[in-house]
Every structure is written in C-alpha cells, then in structure tokens.
Image (cartoon, rainbow, N blue to C red):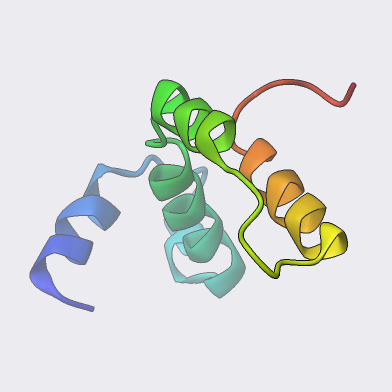
Length: 77
C-alpha cells in the first residue's frame, strides 16, 4: 500500500480494532470510499451523450447503456 492509500485507510472508522485486518472489510471500505465519489451529473452526461457507434451491435450498445446507467441513480425502472 502506498502513502496515499494509508492516509485514506486511516480516515476509516472501524467497529473493532481487529476489523482493520479483515481483508473483506478493508476492501469494502476502499470500494465505498472510491465509488461514493462519483459525480452523478457527470455520469448522467456520459449516459445521455452515449450514441450507438458505427458497426456496433444493438446488444453491445444496450449493454453499455446499462453499465453507464448503473452510476446515474435513475432507479430500477
């Protein structure tokens, strides 16, 4: 782990001192930290600007739209 990762690690709150050494809990904290920083307006702009590329299949296009929509907070509708 580099110095920046250690700084971020030290920002986390832990249920117990022992939970700092549980791999799954550490990964979960880092995942939440970095995924929580997404800019929803930017993610929606990416989604709204996405157009089907020349030669791209409809299945690939729709799959990519689903991936982009995941971070837009549009809901499950």
